[in-house]
Each structure stands twice: as structure tokens, then as C-alpha cells.
Length: 187
Image (cartoon, rainbow, N blue to C red):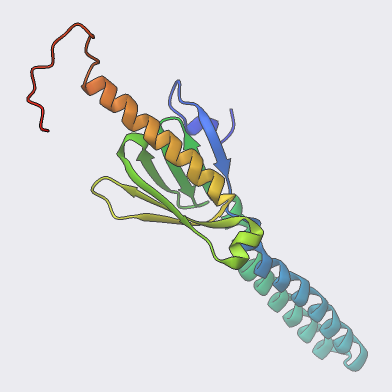
């Protein structure tokens, strides 16, 4: 079994598994696409204008600088993107992040009291946005860059509403039609 299946409880059904929207990778990709040709150009200039130890030292410095920039500004965001999971099951919402240090948030469906989303013009064009989940007695949790945020909102709202209905049905069993209602009615 692979992730997220191994994070589920027995009998729990996976409804949705998403990474953040790909727009989070635009800047890291742009940095890679600018830094690589720039480093190549600088290596060419060093090779054409310098000889000996100076050329070697500057070439190594350019490669080390390029490697540092690419790892810091491109590789780390890619690994972070790959290790961030937004999961909806029939029982809860899970958010997992991290490679070396794992962080997780679990919100039971029955505790969700409100679900909202927001997205601006660019987010609407890219079909992404921020999902806001309010659970009973907790501050709202905001999840940025959720792909297809409107569909996720609808799914989460439906699951939370169904969970509230199931909880209400378990706490207040249905009466039989022949039983008399002894509660006072306010007109």
C-alpha cells in the first residue's frame, strides 16, 4: 500500500488526494530556467578570458553558486510540493507536509462547522484557490493553492453535512409514526 492509503483507518474510504496546485512551482521553474543558462554563459566567459588556476577557481565558484541557487530555490520547493498532501476521506480531512519533519492536521468530518473558499481572478483562471475549514471550537484553517477548489469545497461541504446528519440520527433515533409527540408546540 502506498501513501495515503497507509494513513487511513480500517474501513475508511479515500475520496480525494491532492498536492498543491502546480502554480506553486512556477517561480522555482523560472529560477532554474534563468540560473542554468546564466551559469553556462558565465562558465563560457571564464573559459574564454581566463587560464590556469583563476579559470578553475572561478569555474568552481560559478558551479557551486549555481548548485546552491538551484537546490535552495528550485529543488527544495519541488520536494516540499511533492511532500504536501491534502486528503479527504469519508471520515476526516488530513493535511500532511514535510520530508524530514512531518506535520499533520486531521479534522473529523463531524467537527466541521463551516467550509469556505476564495479565489481571485488569476486563481479562477488556474482553477485553484484557498480553502477555509472551520471546525467546532478551533480557529479557521486555511489551505492555499488547492486545485479545483470549488469542487473540493462542494465535496467537503457534502461530506461534512452528511456527517452531521449521521451524528444527529445516532443521537436522536427516529420516532415511530404511531408515537404521540408530547412536546409543547409553539404557534
